Length: 362
Ligand code: NAD
Image 1: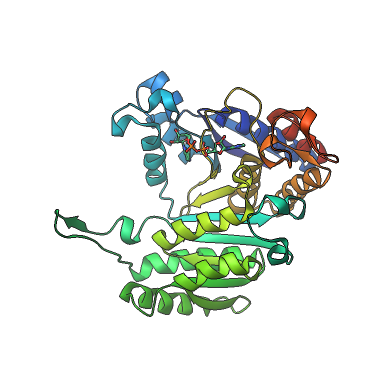
Image 2: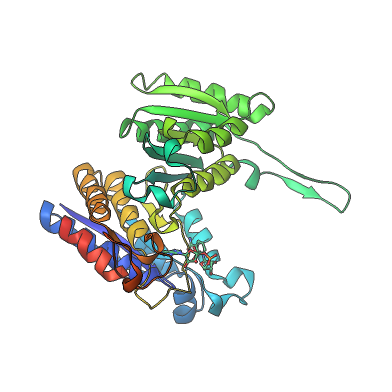
């Protein structure tokens, strides 16, 4: 089959990690007999330099016409002093809006061989951590009515039945592709919006008899993520709770260079990107970890193209390369980034070599 993928390399390490992800996608195409047509598009600082705006209309058009969008990262010191509407992040916010991305999926996986990177004790992690946080992205308190002055201020958490229904459905659909367990996180003992959330999620669950649904208050969910993260499969939650819990779940893995994400719309293309930024400190040094971008590409295969076997192959290749002891500096056991200081059994490689090895495994 032939698929079109919009590719936004972005700024800083963006181009390096996206090149790594495309290399891995090329290996998938070759092995499974697909054609991936990449359509390059500009966003962020690169777009500001070339076109004077952080999100050219042409980029929106290319993305809308694609089957999925792969993004590196945007931003950097060069554009830090730009006016708010001309900052690189403004491009990303505008693209999310243009594509109607209402569901944000953030996996948090602790790989056995990277267990030392986690701030949690091995005994807590021994059951294996593989969590998917599904966060509602376009509603809730970040978009509710707000106001105030120096003496009093307020924000509003509001959800409609429709908003809850579609994110719940997305979470159950994702759970069907994984462990078939959903924990819905809310604060239904206090908040009216959470009471409706819980009711609607329960109703949606009736359409998914193969998925087990449980409910958890957000304060307990935070505690459980630190005490026993292995108990979770899919967590579905509102915008602000998801913002906080997805960072907490990511922190449990201990490796920012390994964390992928997907943002999905109702019917258009999804946007796939690492959760990290453009890491200007590493840019141009072939030192970044491309795994988050490569795992984002795997999510694109699975969720936008429906290519399950292919996505499994990418994730398995990443796992195998890590098990062989291949590390970029950020996930190496040694503290310093040079190959000389690597500990026994580990080979510290650059961004290109890491991607090459993962592609070769495929
Ligand atoms: P960052 O995520 O870029 O970097 C934080 C730390 O993590 C740095 O030490 C960096 O070297 C390290 N790191 C990040 N990705 C890595 C990788 N793949 N491999 C190895 N190490 C990695 O966050 P920051 O420094 O706060 O932001 C830098 C720039 O990125 C800013 O301009 C910010 O606005 C932008 N940013 C963009 C996005 C995005 O595009 N979605 C997200 C966050 C930040």
